[in-house]
Length: 339
Image (cartoon, rainbow, N blue to C red; front, side, top):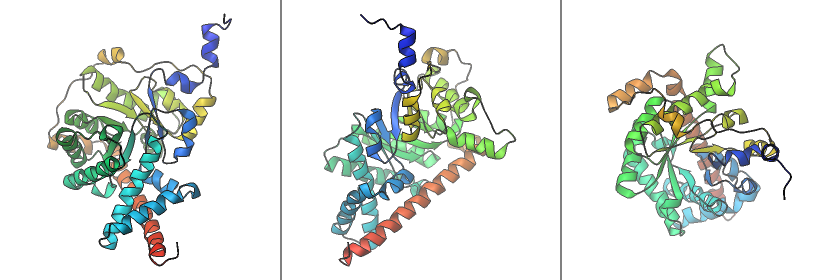
C-alpha cells in the first residue's frame, strides 16, 4: 500500500504530466527526434521549423530523397523546386507521424495567403502526397494563414473535400470569429507573438502570466467558442515561457516547443485547470456574425493583429524562399553529379 499522500504525489508529478490531464499537448517542431521523450499527442510544423530541421545533418537524407523526387517528376526548374518542397514538407510529416499517435500539421506556402484557390490546390496536393504514402487525411491538419482568403479556403477544404484545417497566424478576435463561422477544425492563436508586440509597442515590459495579453486573447477566444457551442477547437501556440502555457491549462490543445516541453518535464509546481466549459458558459461575451466587410474592418481596427499577421506571413515566406534556395543549390549539384 502506498504511503504517499495525494498532495505529495501531485508535487512529485511533473507540470507536463499534470497539464496533459486538462489539455492535449502537441509538439511544435520539425526536429522529430526531439519529441519522442515528451509523448505528445500531435505535432505541428511550419516553414521556419522545417528550414531549421533541413539544415541539420540528421535530416539530409530526407532532403536528398525529396530532391530526387522533384527531379524525377520533371517540368521546369520552378516546378521541380515546388515539387521538392511539397515532398519535403510531407516527408517530415510522415516521420513525425511515426512518433505521435495523433495528427501532424503541415503548412501551405505563406506566399499563397491571399489566393484562396491557390491554397485549396496546394492543400489537396499535400493531402495526395500523404495518401500516396499510406496516410489518410484524418491524420493531417493543413495549416493556412488566417487571412479572409485563407479562412474561406479552409471552409471549402472542410466542406467539399473533408480536409481538416489548422488556421494559423491568428491574432485578432475577428479572425477567431470568422474561423468559427467557417467551421474549420482548429485554430492556432499565437500567444508569445502578441506579448512580443505589447513589449515592443507599449511602456510595459513585464506581465504576470494571467494578465499576459496573449493569454488574455486566447482565453477570450476559448470562452467565446465554448459559450456558443462552436465545433472549432483552440490550440494556443507560440509560447515565450512556461508561465504562459500553465496559464492556459484546460485549453483544448497547446502546441509547445521542445525547449519548453523540457522545462515543463523538470517543473514540479502545481498546474490547475484555468479554462473549462463551465467557466466559459458564464462569461459575458455577446455573439457576433461577421460579413467579409465586418471582418476586414474589425481586424483592421486591431493594430497589433494587422502588424503581426503581415509580419508572420512575410517571415514564413522568407524562410520558404531560403529553403527553396537551399534546394536549388543541392539540386544543381545532384544534376551535375556532385551530390
